[in-house]
Length: 141
Image 1 (cartoon, rainbow, N blue to C red):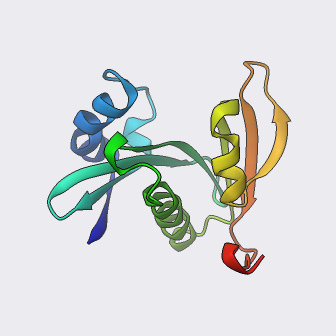
Image 2 (cartoon, rainbow, N blue to C red; image 1 turned 180 degrees about the horizontal axis):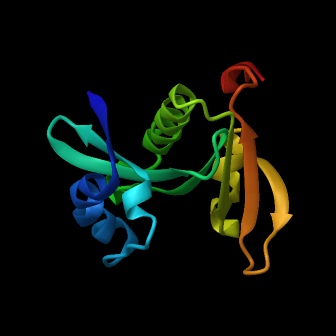
Image 3 (cartoon, rainbow, N blue to C red; image 1 turned 180 degrees about the vertical axis):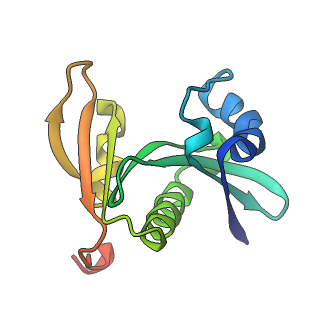
């Protein structure tokens, strides 16, 4: 059974950093660790997924990253991580989520109903999603 744990700030970073290093190929952190919500997904007691989002205003958050351990990919774990992040953000009053992604991950975020807002100066794609809009089940589309 997949379960998620959200931890705010430095404690969340400490909880997620080892799996982040495995997924992203080395330890990576920035100055937003203390101001972000960190999510860790567990299969029983084993960490299998991580993510982070940062409120950037009272109604907007930025999804900084989503990562799933390689042996759990293509099993909809990433979808569950995104859904958990969006649900947590909504409980905080967040109405819009934004993110930047490389071209390679564009299909994943489009599947998650994120709108392509165009290329950024650094070559990533800026995306956004209205979290208040009710989306039809993907299987019903």
